[in-house]
Length: 405
Ligand SMILES: Cc1cc2nc3c(=O)[nH]c(=O)nc-3n(C[C@H](O)[C@H](O)[C@H](O)COP(=O)(O)OP(=O)(O)OC[C@H]3O[C@@H](n4cnc5c(N)ncnc54)[C@H](O)[C@@H]3O)c2cc1C
Picture (cartoon, rainbow, N blue to C red):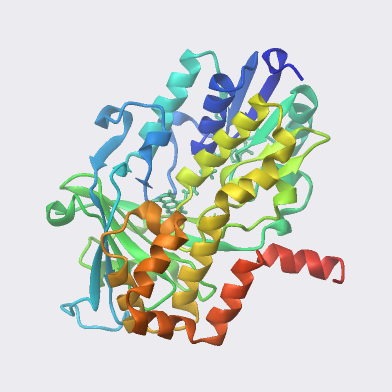
């Protein structure tokens, strides 16, 4: 198809949708790109810690006016031996990981400015109204390409009545609070405290921060809000008002069979959270979503869009594998001392290393033979190693069960 004559609808105008519109107008050359977003950009809700680890992916100047409010050096991981500890207990380990292109952001501002920049380049925005299942069918009918960036569960899977295709999620809460964050403004903190997940305090300035908590494992508290408040007290950041707290889920990537990310007959493609690709260990999904959208735009520009599911899996594979093993260090062992030793081994690496470069992490862990042996000498970890080596995920098990394999 000659894409200079083609039209595209982007469903969802958050980071992945905006990246899709950017890619389609810049790299592919569409005659019309329309973004459907149910919220208004002036009052958009943000369910997010607002840490963007690779801001080079966003085509805006990195200014406070564009929402890039705190240019951080990296993050500090603080590992404690549990949640039941004296308030003045020292961490078992602190470890600094670096992130040169990272910012703590006002994400709603970034999205507003990004959408405005696209609008100036003739991208059409339909905002303030949810796309209904009927409208979805009309859109699919009337555009040549549809990029579904509507989050998890996606509009496409909702329209097909197939939201159970997602095989896992995490839960996270966040809020913006006021306080004194000057002591660690340049190095936001992540607090690991014996459960599978963590709390965070990400300063946006000396006087305000995004704070929150998330659970990457299947064991979740009965009272999410109470758990956030207790984490705030333990870790000396202000307790947010319940009315200000957002709660949402994040995919446990890969939480969707790649074959469900592309519907050739309708030319529908899923990107970002809709495609279930966020990091299953630390919940990062912004850069993952943007990368998936740029990949898709490049493939469309080259006429190779049918390879999208395979290329997306290939792009994400190292990250999926590393995140599965990192999570294993928590889930299989439940040993804060081991976790502290792993965190210390990571000191000085970059966020990119610890999310996307298994070899960099393996080298560091191997430099501490006792830690490496303790980590691997466990049946659960051996199963995980076999699973990642053979690319076995929850969706693979579901697929096998469906076909009685
Ligand atoms: C509490 C919390 C903290 C997090 N912290 C971080 C972090 O610090 N850094 C990070 O990288 N990631 C973080 N994540 C994950 C990250 O927020 C997501 O991975 C990311 O938002 C995915 O972007 P997306 O554009 O794919 O989907 P979404 O952000 O879910 O956007 C989907 C868009 O589609 C729109 N939409 C949905 N349905 C319709 C409809 N029917 N019609 C029209 N529009 C529709 C929505 O309004 C929304 O704008 C966090 C998540 C949570 C829950």
